[in-house]
Image (cartoon, rainbow, N blue to C red; front, side, top):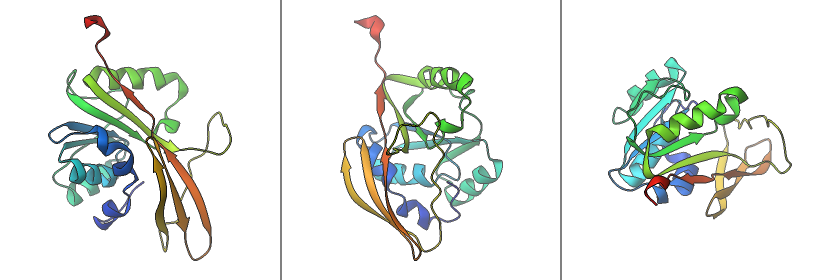
Amino acid sequence: MFCADKRSADEHSFAVALDSKYIRQGDTALEVGSSSGVNLASICRATKCRGLGIDPSGEAVSKGQQLFPELELRVGTADKLEFPDHSLDFSLFGFCLDLVDREHISRVLAEADRCLRDGGWIGITDFMPDVPAARPMPIALPRRHTSLTTVGCSPHSCTFSCSSRHASTALTIASPLIRKSDCARR
C-alpha cells in the first residue's frame, strides 16, 4: 500500500498488533514489499527496532526515504535480498507474496531463510478470505473517507471493521509466523 504521509503510519496499526510481540528492542526487522515504509515505521516506533525495507517501486522507496529517514529503504525484490547471511531477526512479507510467481516462491523463502538469524521469525501477513482460493485477488480499500476499526485480535489474526460513506464490511488479516531454529545443533 503506497501511503503519501506520515499520519498514515499511525492509522495502519495491524502490523504492530500482529507482529510486534515477536520483535525486541534492538532487533533488525525487514519488511519485504515495504512500499513507502508506513507499516515498517509503525513497527519500529512500537518496538524500537532497526527497520529495513525493500520494494520494487523506486517511486515508493524515494517517497518513504523522505517521510521516514530513520528507515533504511531500498529498491529490490524478495528473490535477491542484498543482506548478509544471518543478519535479520524478523522478516515480514506484508501483502506481497501473492504477487510472486509460483516458480519463484521457493527462492524467495530461501533468501529470507539465508538472511534470518537462528531464533528469528518470518511473518506472512495477508487477507484471510472466507473461502479457499488458489490465488486470491488483493482487496483494495478506498483511501478517502475510510475508517478502519479493530474488532478483535487472536494471536495470529485481526478482524477489522472497514467503513466509508458508501459501504461497510469486515475483513480479517492473518499473520502466520515461522520461527527459524538451528536443527544441526540439536
